Image (tube, rainbow, N blue to C red; front, side, top):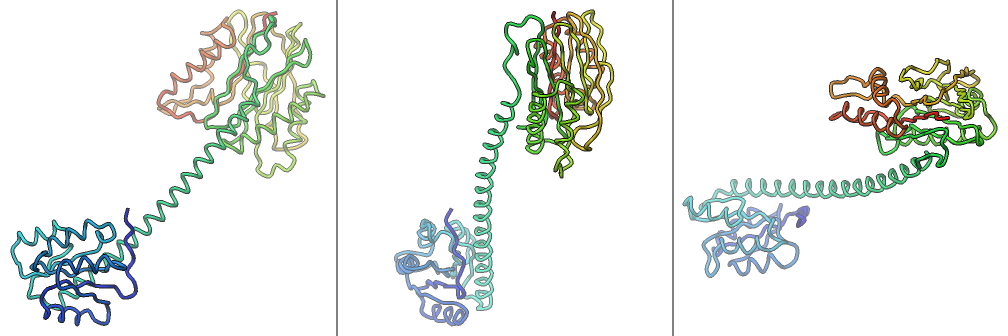
Length: 402
């Protein structure tokens, strides 16, 4: 887009007329407040307009020898540097057809001769004011476009960094399944679907030794980058403590104390931590404010795992976590989840809820862990179709097969 120059302190007016008396009259009118240039024919007018800075406004007669005002105006409008210069026609032609022709040629106004000096001065002032406003608007528009481009580049960089952060976050949770190829004594599968590019849910598992499997699922308060960072710190603490501690309750106590240090943001995490002795099926577990998992018995019964007390993790140092123990039989399945599952909303504002979880677990009774979680994910998608995912969705299933 051609930039419209902002008029100088004294705008320049080009007066084009082949009648000397009109030129004297107009230049006298404009003298003092404006700088004036004069042309007595169309060719000279084009020459003057194209040399040096363009005029700020042109007063243009129509009836001139060789090249009339209509043609002059058309030539002016063909030049990028002149096309935005306002042209006011001054003519003795008084027919509507002449006025229409003038406007179609590119004029902004039309004054009929003989003219009143006050009218000419008023219209000149008005069109110069419009031109100044137009120039200011174009300047503001250019600034807005520059700001938008800067924001676009910044947004692109942020998106790139967030995608990189997502890849880092997703690398912190194990995603290769079967989790432990070659083992026939258990089955395990898990998924993590952040509500945004990155989130605060996580799961983890690993073998202490050939007979002991530990696992954890967690949900950090909040969303986005802060939650993801808190999640990464929490996972690091748990991994570090698990190298020394095989007691789920003591593990949560130590994680809680570590997270409370310098936690000025008052963020917290809910956790469920379990330890399974694979030869016996004995499961010891502790929870820190997290949803209690479901246990699907081999016979098809679905119920919450026996309750165990435990506060939110990361808010208050020195709190005690309880521990509970149950025994899994062959074919029993544990289903762990975050509240992004139970609190998934449909378009009517109704939550998926625990009863639908139980109903879906009954449908997939006897299936492998991947099929169980796949069925739950499909049920969630069907229920929430048309609604935005409001929270991270994380699920982990463990099936005892020994």
